[in-house]
Amino acid sequence: MTIEQLSGNLVYQDGSNLWVIPDKSSSNWSQKLDWYLNIQISKANSFKRPEISENLQNIITEEEVEAVEIPKQNGKPLLIASPKHLPNLMTIVLSYDKMDEEEWLSSLQKSWIELGKPSLRVFLPKNFSLTTFTNFSKSNLSGNVTFVTDS
Image (tube, rainbow, N blue to C red; front, side, top):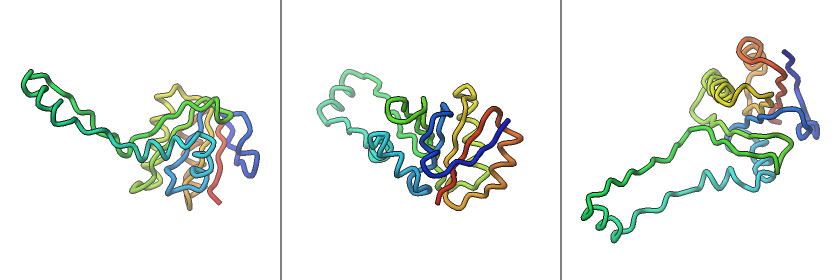
């Protein structure tokens, strides 16, 4: 296993299939990458489900149809297919708000495993401990891992 820190324009080079970024409030990189992703992060964050109209609600009630409402998944990872926008296959946004470092890393590991353990580039949240990240990576991740600090 190799762990390598990237900086500057090297951040945009090929080499990792999955890029993991924190939410926009926790990283300056998220703001920059959102531009390349055609503002998909901003769109997802501001999405509001349409309300069922009163007429439709009356029909549903009269016909005794079950209308299942799918709640918004606040705090859940946002997966974006990004090969047309960035030199990777997938970008996942993991909320860091109201989490500590260990919780965020556990969420990262869970998502990474569920996606089949692809090669990984991690954009760390602001003020994230490099020691915590490298120790976690050595014991919980495999393959080539690149990371970027928020500066």
